Length: 145
Image 1 (tube, rainbow, N blue to C red):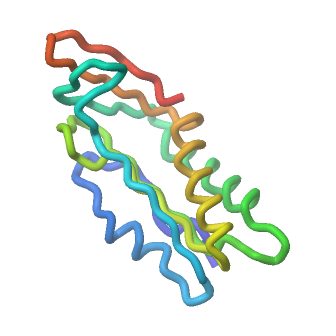
Image 2: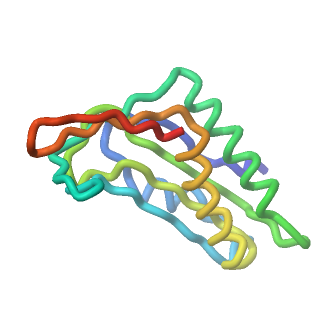
């Protein structure tokens, strides 16, 4: 059974329902998901919008991260059954969904652990960069990894 049921970078709005549906499994007793949205501030400055860019290898790196998360968070015969992750690229506005990750596991402990690791490791290891614009006209690049 393929444990990575959905992954990708998209330049269109992301669907929470699609990601949650992708990890549904009759073996799972717990499902956890995280939704990251564009907020209106960063480090005390007002953000108007942002844009995400990704390296051509970003999806392959996302798959490697997801495989490692599944392997590391499945333990003691209590597996993580399914994981899914989508990240938005292109121009986004305040309130838009930027990333959705989900994990379904035998128990909630593994589901929560896998979900947390997914978002943390994607942000730390997948080459996706954010360019944000502030209300004062300044802009900055923020490296996701």
